[in-house]
Image (cartoon, rainbow over the protein chains, first blue to last red):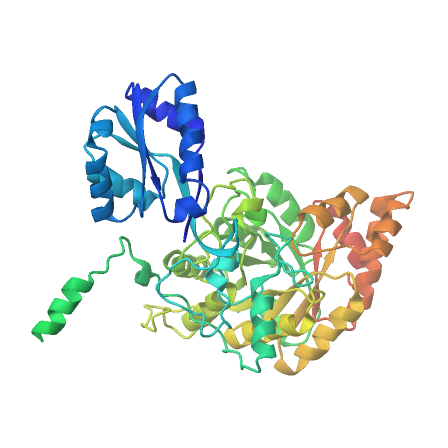
Length: 223
Length: 292
């Protein structure tokens, strides 16, 4: 899931002040931001109080099923058309994908209410860790299912670096070195190590990413 | 051909030191270090934005050492932190063009620990991969295998931390680097000669040359800084106690370094002395160890 965290309220205040927004509609997300406790109902209520404390009126709020789903978000926007029309701005408590989807769904100025930080594994309730950077050139087959690109702070493919000490990372010293963990797991599983990992293909992650299954299917049907 | 390479290959004991390029364009302070260190060292490492803090580039500073070292050669350091694969290869070609023949390829400290903590750490290649690229340039090709219009003939070195545990993984790393093209290693500061000997024994069959790091632990403050702030190095208590309880910590640290150099002389292929600014002490240490 996408992990978000609260955005510095001073930045949100400055955004709204810039356009002289007196009325605001708040949009949350029923998916990741709800689980991350950044864009569910309790957080929307907090944002409402903060906006009111700044002297603004909240015209209404909504939590769509998934903020980044264009069809669903357009539907939510239609359901709340009156409240949105009455607002000078829309504050979105969702990841950057959700913010952009809302911006595509309403005509009002849209502002991010959160910072999007990483694709997170849910370790347990309320505990999230970044394990994958979606690099498009997976090496987990060679690294015993532990991603060095993500979990080594330097993203080294061949490690450990010179700062590893007693199996600990030099940058995040309370963490185990990703490369030591990889080597240990490979050894435990009796797997032979690759001589060295080749440089990554960063072109696989050229921006912006795009997948269109419909076009792919259409091409297949034609061939 | 690099005299430093020549000496190591002939089995002579080498002495290397270290100079830091300035945080600015005035390199007179560095030249002063070169003036003190070059008479007693065979080569001087020229650090590359050491500690992830901004300094004059190792490329330009290495050339200054080459021009002013009276035969004491620069070891151009290249980290993977600040440049992508295009810039790294381009800088290697630049180094060779400038007459720099020795290169130490290292990962580099994370930017979060330096003076530009908001910088993006590049790490497009890691040190092993960059060694392989450098070895390729020595064979006349870029990292795509495409022939270069004039190649290089670098003497390629890497870093090694003989005291870091688990040792089997450290050894595996060293062998990986040798396989990628490293022919000499400069080690982290040695605090346990037996562990250095373990590394030397393990690597001897490969023919790689091992230059042992000796750090001048000038005073208890330096030791505290190393233990708390410097990545991957811990000064054991018996050493810190010895410096802390000495009437003259600097003199004691010189005595300690001298003992270490004497001990390492029979095991290592050379010593790399890191005086942490006390450049005058280097000659004293080497004289004391019977090397000058």
